[in-house]
Length: 147
Image (cartoon, rainbow, N blue to C red):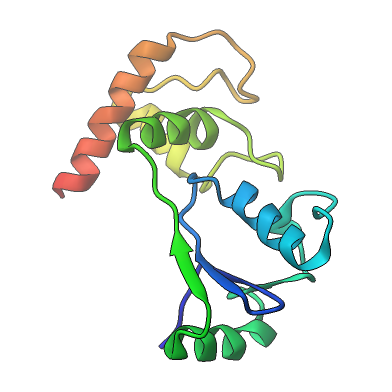
């Protein structure tokens, strides 16, 4: 049993169940601040110290124990589904990720081919009909939920 996508303060005062695209960077920074009195210098997703994360093997036992015994405040954050899918489209489908590549490798080419979505060219800087492409992306979302 485990709790993937979970972060916990080093002081074990709070546990956060991460939901992507739902303020996780901001929440992670606040958690870091609560223990250290300063914000993490950089992207909190890149922090390898100062915050327990399920992705770090050395944190898993601590998170597991804390969650099972309910020793601290545990929470998650969700957002309006429409704004989440809109953000996902522009950040994950049209945008270029921090590593300089497209999100999930073959997903964008598949969406371009199967749904006719435009994403602003190879580097995401070209003009395109965003409304038309977003509507086509919603067809992909519908199909993914349906099947």
